Image (cartoon, rainbow, N blue to C red; front, side, top):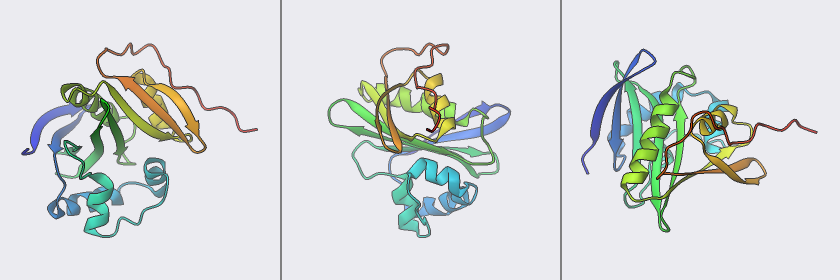
Length: 185
């Protein structure tokens, strides 16, 4: 599959959305610059463990997948810099796993929303009934975004929550179903 490219305007930030079936070493330089714009705290919230992401193989491995039909979807600003990255990995059993990361200097600009919507649409087109992901319990931005798109929380495993959403139905943006963070005791 060759890259699919579309243009969009996200909260005044002109962006180019690219769907990539397989990341290659040629993508590593763009990802390296992207990682420099992500704080260690945001990187931890995405990966739940610190990754050095120093080599081309680590970068393409962290943001890509070798699974069949998997995709990396990213947005780029008009200057060519990557602004957000999502991974979509269809699984056996009719669901797709997803994860995303937005540049730390661009929060709350709609980039995460664009990527979630693209992952939902793409999973639906791939006949995946559910979109599933793991979210760090302290990743408040992702939890809010998941709530915006009516994801449900089904389990908590220590530092993570499992979230899922049926790809076949439209979300009611007024219905937030991901639970609010509980105070620490």
